[in-house]
Amino acid sequence: MSDKVLHLNSSNFDETIASNKVVLVDFWAPWCGPCRMLGPTIDELAGEVGDDVLICKLNVDESPEIAQKFGVNAIPTIIFFKGGQRLGTAGMSSKDALKAKIKQFA
Image (cartoon, rainbow, N blue to C red; front, top):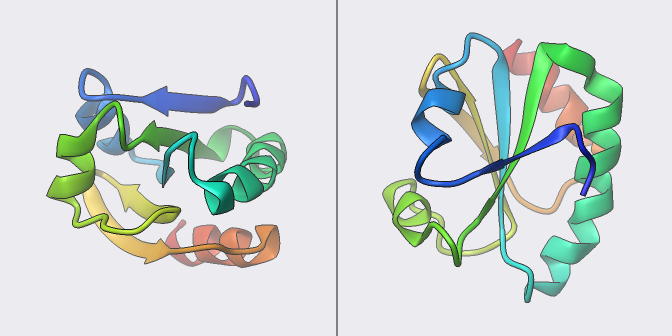
């Protein structure tokens, strides 16, 4: 995992998504094949978007209550937040598609 990707859990989730920046949260699990396939895309994206966007991952096995709160019933699921508000979602996506979503919400 890139050092530019934040690892979220129940102790830092609410504070992080309250940011005035766009926050991309990748809901994933280590046993999930598609999640592992998406991982390098998330890492690359984190390296390219700079400090304007927070790129985060949340392990649904470690924080199931957060996944449940946001209705995540399939992974990978990506949810975009800004100012604590949910802006939109995505599933398996290309880096360009994720960049377009970020631009839409910025």
